[in-house]
Length: 238
Image 1 (cartoon, rainbow, N blue to C red):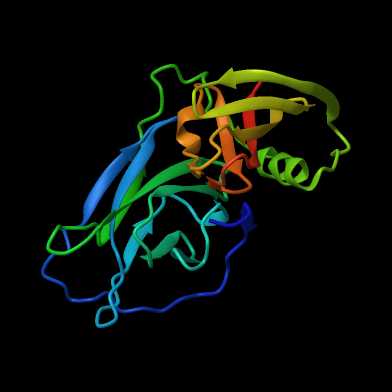
Image 2: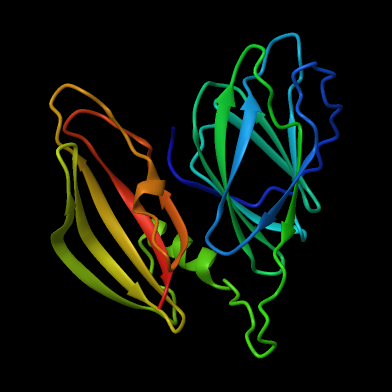
């Protein structure tokens, strides 16, 4: 996959879903904070236009994607997301609605006769019993993520160097802190992911670095060559 892409997709895409015997029934998923929604997508075939339609609770404002265009086609119209999987690749897709809500989707490929999701409706969970509690809005998180990727300092942010301190280490990779961003509501981290192997590429699954207070996560690349490195971007609530 290529560099992390922050795309505001606004070009309508009118498509007819393929009439396929393996298309699963439409399903409804109740989404709660911090939950990842799994999606099973059929890998596209030359003779069939296999599209999965995800309907969100509100109009889509931004789609945050690290996918390469040759692996996943993403289009949006209103509150609908049209996904077409072009390669046998698994990964995450983050969507921010006009209400400021963040939804994370996990795309998993299926092939052959295996059933796949043709239509998925996301519904918001019921509000908490305490009426005084209001759901936190993620306004400003996407802008902070963009600034971190571009190496810029937003006007309301304080930026501190991380000194390349190793904050995570495994037999496969080292994770070093490059920069920390602080705003009134969020804390962002820019980290360097180093592949320790001298012969094998490392496939970075950003989900393994997910935390309870996390708002957004993304990487510059998801495949890191032998002795290579990439950057990981994390935004969390303070």
